[in-house]
Image (cartoon, rainbow, N blue to C red; front, side, top):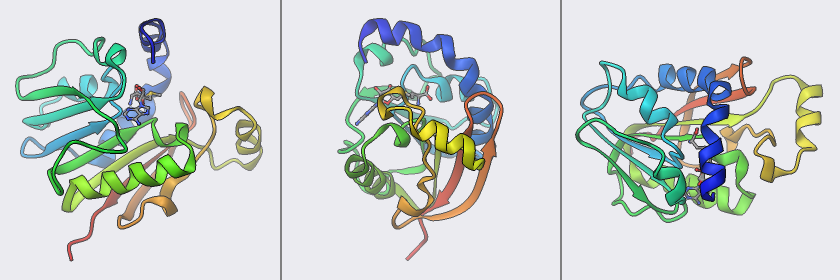
Length: 191
Ligand SMILES: C[S@@+](CC[C@H](N)C(=O)[O-])C[C@H]1O[C@@H](n2cnc3c(N)ncnc32)[C@H](O)[C@@H]1O
């Protein structure tokens, strides 16, 4: 995203907030967690979490766009930002306890999505959690309408449950306020 899009991005954050909060409720973050927020954008999830007592001591936000990262602002000590591609995360296998990907997967084409999903699984530790938020609705008529919107507008609905290979979906919650969304908590099973 360019600088103008990044500047305008935060104006729609109130529409994301209900799902962000639902995602954090599913994620159940703890101070001992090492968190990775993939495609952090302007840091909506990190900023929400930063205000909470249960926030992880260590967190990393990555995004492909410098312009988005530039707008994140101050973060707690121990939290960092990095420009990186979600398709090739610059982290060792099983580096994180909790990996979040908020409003990313439904914006990607199926091939990229499969690569990114594999990366989410690779970098989360066994027994760790992956939490995703996508635009989605359980209402078939609304889903049909939204499916007609070109993917680049970010409103093309997606339930990624069956695409999270190697992860087991433990909880799913539809959120109707703000953007109609689906929050999933999946776990990487221990071998
Ligand atoms: C709709 S925004 C969501 C941002 C943030 N998670 C939020 O909820 O506000 C999508 C973000 O994904 C980032 N993005 C898209 N493709 C990416 C990729 N392959 N690797 C890393 N970031 C990517 C974009 O730069 C953008 O910041």
